[in-house]
Length: 563
Image (tube, rainbow, N blue to C red; front, side, top):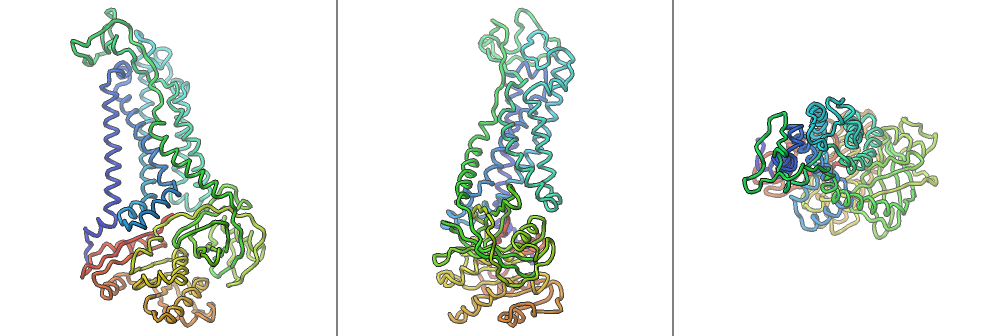
């Protein structure tokens, strides 16, 4: 089945259009700033000394300033959550696609800052060299060098822009190297702590141009740039004069002043929005959460049951957790598997033990009963929690919130990626309004071993029985796919759901083409919301399947969970 260009445009075309607009704005800004410093009369003399490197350095600086402002907006989690809530009420699919691409836009802005910073740095290296070589003996106030052929290194390090620029480049190198996928996945702490240095980088950015070496002419009216005041001429070729016959004036020497700082013009508004967002989140954290229950499941999965005064959340949202006993700085995102309701304020998350932070959390909660890095062997056993301080930030929006916007829903999960759907199914179980809204719900869960679903199987089984009581058993279609053979089959699962899982169990990965064709044949001409959370190969296969052209005009709208 061929890929549909129209479907591709529907799914990610909007994202690419926005990225193209952003790229065009960056290019036009670069070109405009380059032309300004090349042809603006105020920069005539400094341009004579530095040449095109002046224009390149200032044009790159404008791109840096623009993207240093834009990069903050996707990180305003509270603002993004409010926007998603607004578009959910208005059912704007285009807006949903834009919000889903916030992380990608953040990364794109980071790449632009990196490239522009390298260009800016190289250009200023040549500027320092030209300041030293092309020392202006006639109008000495325009010089950055103190004398002819001064060492360019001292020209750079002897100024505030030079010193702060070097510091910012060091911070940028740390952030970039720690953000590489391999480093981020293998040493998340380095990624987390290096990003904290960005706050210092913004402070340096705002003072970067203070007492800078670049000078502009202030008295254009009384001294036309390029005129030979008192018959003094330059030893290098001059460009054409920036004046007409009527405006020519050469009454006094040119007077020069600092260009001044322009970064705050670009960064101030996004920075104020971001700081406001952070302050709101800090105030919201003042009410600490309390752990009311902990459950240690098979396959190294920990369930935390919590309560917090005034906490409200919707299915599909996620929260950030911090345990001061483990780290005073680390916050980790987890999808809610149970949302608070009017009848019960309890909410929960499920955490896979697969790293140093989660290993220390396991040891903090259960002590030496389960050593760090060892498999959690207590199955479905509720242990009374200790008095452990827990800080919580959120809830925040995610693409999984939009499950309620469709009557036909396909949920695909890989491993622990089932957690975003757990809160939705819990709400589906208790909310009669949701049950009436849905026509069909497909849930496909791919995992390595049967025992990995022990903590979730009972929820699905109970939901299935309740749907039978409501005479709507066909609304839920659950399928389990296991990629490795398990000799114990379903024996490690609770007795109540062993038979239910066994009947829906298949070994091997799903054949996505057959699954999508089945949905098309059952629901011709319908719109299906597809939600995926799991490894990249899994989500990519689902995304490509949604782009394909299907008969009878059945549409699949793809959503992916991205923190």
